Amino acid sequence: MRLNDCHNFQDFRTLAKRRLPGPIFNYIDGAADDEQTYRRNTEAYGDCDLIPNVLVGVENVDMSVEVMGQKLDMPIYCAPTALQRLFHHEGERAVARAAAEYGTMFGVSSLATVTVEEIAKITNTPKMFQFYFHKDRGLNDALLERARAANFNVLALTVDTITGGNRERDLRTGFTSPPKLTLDSLMSFATHPTWAWNFLTKEKFDMPHLSGYVSQGTNVAVSVGDYFSTMLDQSMNWKDAEKLCSQWNGQFALKGIMSVEDAKRAVDIGCTGIMVSNHGGRQLDGCRSPFDQLAEICDAVGDKIDVICEGGIQRGTHVLKALSVGAKACSGGRLYLFALAAAGQAGVERALGNMRTEIERDMKLMGVTKLDQLSRGNLRFHTSR
Picture 1 (cartoon, one colour):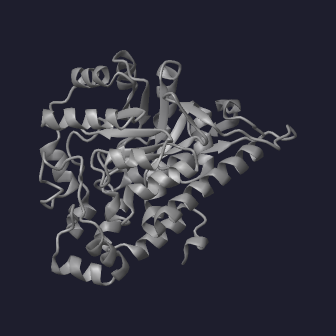
Picture 2 (cartoon, rainbow, N blue to C red; picture 1 turned 90 degrees about the vertical axis):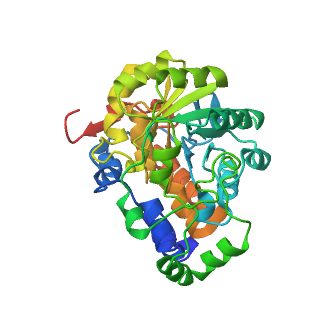
């Protein structure tokens, strides 16, 4: 299989599986416990049908949106994800350039492998910095100030990683960041020589936002679950989130909201956006899917705050369904991470291009020329909501 053969999410996943050592592929692909929530995140869209209109003239469609003050050329953006240079040696650089090519937002993680300063030089399109609230207050202050100085447009505090999820695939494969050199991992690297060559001969793997503050994950190999459980502040509460929102004093979102009550509190503390997300099914298995939960959250706060639907999106129709319910935009991680692993920047560009093509075609087939013409009137659910 080649990049030109990748026409959808599953094609990119298949190619990524061929390109990556097993532990690293399974880190992207895996989730918590029995991975029920991971599967449900996508299956939920299949429980909802679109009802199209015809004969309305759709020569020109406008799929642009404004979310958290940012104008995006398409209604989906690249959610922040960690450790991208493990998946391809270009890492966040490749994703930033691809997102800029398609005029959409790119999220940079606290656990990124390229600095916010370098990302700011690469692209002038909207940028989000994803904030992990560490026990080390000096590190928290440094992260905030670096994102501000690099002129990032949105700060997103992740709130669903108060402890690490039970990612059993990582336990079985022994995945750590950086990868440990064991007999099994060496065998896996040897059978993926292109990945191994790039990892071993390119610049040394690092998480530069953390360097000088923590050794875990940068100089000391550690599982992501252990990192969350030991380095992040489990006492984090609403007062901390409100203080961070005030310190940032700009577009501020909470990433990982799943309840109506929390959505309302996000409005109360001054947030301008929320990501309805369960961390891709990687934290609490048995959690409801974002799409299943979207309607009641939009009903409660959709007129006060920008609601983003994040998780399980693999098709343009998934995006249109979420926007029909009331989301302002969508975001995803695996939808571009498999493409990154498959072919670097060219892979991410193809994945975003495929998504843009699907959204445009599906808008025309739905009989809409602008996204605000979508509504729940063009949806029917298989089960009662």
